[in-house]
Each structure stands twice: as structure tokens, then as C-alpha cells.
Length: 386
Figure 1: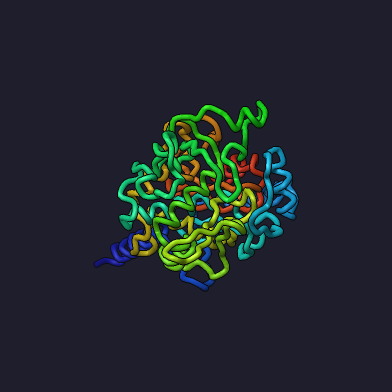
Figure 2 (figure 1 turned 90 degrees about the vertical axis):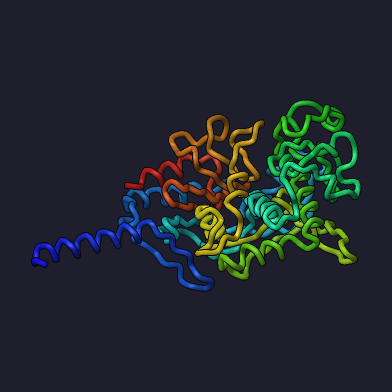
């Protein structure tokens, strides 16, 4: 081999190894220092990426850092609303950007444990997916009354509700759970209490209504299907395998107890609407996002099936931007103009987001970003990609 040929061979080898490293995904082990990559080595314009981070830091959620105050203010028009679960004063803006699993940027206190509000719903959806994968639920289109026969789904209307309806928030389940009345949760702005209470029920699957009482009915139903507390399910099948810290917690309301097999179990919430939900760090949120960016596989272990993830990010009929408790970026309301329609994300009160951008092998976590600014922020991050 000539000297020129030898140089050419090494050039090809180095180029091939570089391309391989760009496409391979890094999965951080538990309690390790998360490996970083220089933004320029990860395909970013470092100056533009820094501008995006400065934008996030400058646009902190405008509500009080005392989240008890923020919750009461945010839901003050709801009749009978009260704090039923734990709350926690929040930190300032924080976030992480991953490219191929490597940390290319972070800001704020990324190890701080804070409330996540409705980001919890995407974790709850995952617990439903695990029940599907483990054959505890035969089909997501099954009627829930065939599994939960204690009266929760009795009646002509409620008996028609499927797991899919609960996951897509279009069940219009009617009733009361843990003192919360379905009709009093985020009621329409027009009409009086009697108009809301005695409304005509929508056929399940036809109208989406964001409603935490019905989300908590799903959590209650899954607790009975698993016959164990849902935090234990999530810990065993997801959080421990992805190397999450020991600091996250999943709370329920103070009165949300149910007896299963002679044991009192806490039924957790799908959000922090009245307190409770998942309390977690930005770094643990990033691990969860990385799992979904990689189609449910962590290293070589398939933790949740790609079949379920495909279902979870499929547009529902009443709302093309909502799947199984994951928000989508299709046309219509909540569409982030100028960004990929393949994006999907978890979103919570106060500006908590986990954004999955599989086209760019990217996960973005933000905490306490003014919610109306998330589209602008994501456009800045995407524009920073060379």
C-alpha cells in the first residue's frame, strides 16, 4: 500500500468513526456524570444555541414561585376547587438539551426536584402502555367496565368508555372521584353551575375535554388492573432501568385511598391540578424523554413496546394534536409553526415540557418557561442546528 493510499485509508476510517459517533445514542448510567458534547461537535451553532438558552432564562413563568398560590390563582374559576395533595415551592428556569443522548446544553438547577403538573399524564400513559405490553389490558379499545366493575363505569354512558377514550381525554366520564366532580373541573366559561352539572353528555370519542377528574379515574382504574401502587410499577419497569435518581416521587390526594386485596393503596393523580402528581428533576425528565426518542429502548432493553409508542403519538379524531396523553405538533390549535409535525411532547402547568424531536435525535426539557413562549424557544433551538 502506498503512502497516499494509507493516508486515504485512515481518512476514511476517521470519517466513518466520526459519522458513527454522531448517529449512535448514549445512555447515561445511574449516578454518573452525564457525558457532554460540544454544541459544534453535535451539529449546533453554539452562538445561536446560547441565544436560545438566554431566551428561556429571560422568559420565566409569570406565576408565583409559591405553587400553592399559583395553583389557587390558576384554577380560581372552578367551583369547589381546593388543594388536596402536596405542593412544593418551585425553582427558577432550568433545562437540558440532548443530542444523541449527549448533553449539549443545560441551565438552571437540573437536579432540583419540582412539581411537573400535567407532564405526569405522559408517565400515566406509559403505565397504561406497560399494562398493555404485559397483557393486563387485552386491547386499548376494550370497555373499561369489563375490567373495573365496582360501579365506577356503571350506567348507559360510562359503560361505553374504553381505555382509549380515557387516554385521549374524550371519554366525557360523568361522576365524582376523591371529592372532585367531573363537571366542575375546567368548566366552560359560559353558563351557570346548573348548565355545567346537567349538561348533555358527549358520545365517548367525539369531543376532547381536558379534565383531571377523568385522568384520575384512569389512574384509579390502572391501580386496580395492576393491583399495586402505580409508582411501584413505574419504578420497576421504567425509572430504575433508565437509571433515574432516587429523588422522584409520585403523589396522590390525601383522601385518595382504595383497598385492593385487603391492602390500602394510594391512587395517584395524573397532574398537580389540586396538588400531587410527579415531583422530579430535569435530569430524570431528560432520561424519560431519551427513552421515548429511542422508541422505548434503553441500551439494548425494550422497556416499553414501540407498538405502544406508535399508538400513544397517533392523532385522536377529536383533536389531531393529542394522542395518549402526549401532545403532538399537527396542524390546528397548539401547532408550533415552522417545526416538524413529527414532534411530540409532554406539557405541564407553569411551563414544564419534555419535547421529543426524533428527526434530529434531540430531547429538550424546560422548566418554568412562560408557556406561550415554548414555540418561540423551540424554533430558536431548531434554528441553531447547522
